[in-house]
Image (cartoon, rainbow, N blue to C red; front, side, top):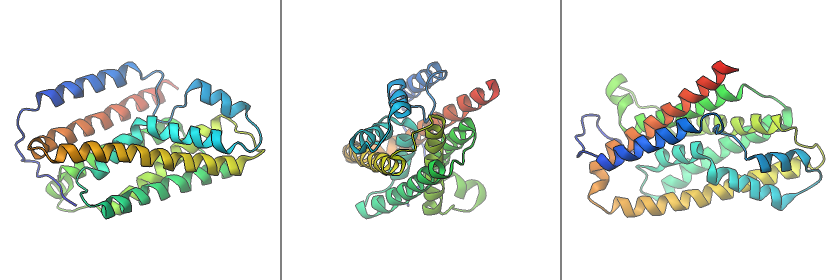
Length: 241
């Protein structure tokens, strides 16, 4: 997998820095309402009040969660940033899906939970990790390269466990639980494919321009900063509870 040397001298990315400031402000301003695995109030009420097998509604909820889940999207953006072959994209996305699906189903069915703030902080760190990996930081600082496939699978476990923890809090009905969970998970994967398709299209256009390599350093710095912001307000939320 391609990475950048940290000494890479990008052109002054003023527009990217402006976007960075806007993203940071938006995340900080929404910190009291938006957690990485928060669910809209209407969806939360539906989950709590529903009973029986509801395949299509739970597929919709799963797809909506993935498409609007900025933590997932940031991580996926980092994962595919330097992946040019669809075969490689398929391998990494499949590993993430396996990890995400496994802990989502396991967590809800067993009732095993953890502090949501801690899990979401780890998920924020997954974004930071991927940005540093793209920047070649681990090779430069420590002389080693983490196994990126294993890391993607492991962080997939945390992403799925974070959502499982949130669903358990909603006390989803036992009637139709397994079919609904499977439907929700199918929806998550559908949403992931939709989001991934959009990201790949945009990346494809960007990679054809001269600005891609010139601004790759700044883009991953932006990604890393967004990850640190996620970690920061999750830890702030933990301190307040």
